[in-house]
Image 1 (cartoon, rainbow, N blue to C red):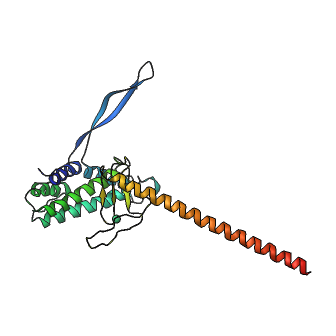
Image 2 (image 1 turned 30 degrees about the vertical axis):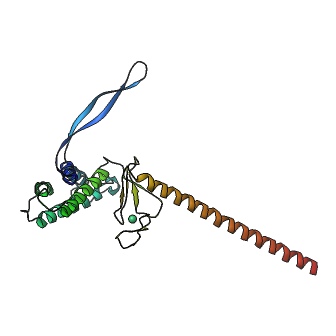
Image 3 (image 1 turned 90 degrees about the horizontal axis):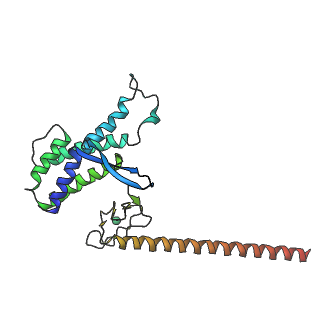
Length: 245
Ligand SMILES: [Zn+2]
């Protein structure tokens, strides 16, 4: 099985299938040492079903007229959940149609059908499917709180050639890094850094930040010097007026 197919199967399983979730638990012994005990195990539904549950939590708490009296009490991820369910439902049905598969009733059924067909299609399409499924999974993980959102790196994307013709990316606000520092990606040009080369990107960000700090410091110095010069000229003019009087 290729890496792509493994990734497709993993993402599909996370999106569609219930799994056991082990919440770590600890107890403190007589010497106040924290020690792990058997984790609390629960069965959680697949991510798509969790998104539906989150979306319904909000709509179910409205009054009988369907008008919510306390709009602020909605969980923050609810609107994102509704949007992502729509994207996944449409995207999975569209992809199934592209592959010539019989359309199914649910996003999960379409995704399972896509996984079933994935091994016998061309590698470009496999990579597209992997991108779709892993992107849905990542977004769901963030919306549902399983994963912290990535951190935005304050530097333009350093990719100098996005299309083989020397077109640089240089996008700003597009670099997102995983919180554990194991990877990053540019949401504009799609470049990705993993454990092997992410240090290079962090080095670029560091240099950019230091250069910006130096540039800001230089700008402040110029402004300070200009102000000092203005004060000097003002003093001189005052002195001349005093002498003339
Ligand atoms: Zn980029």
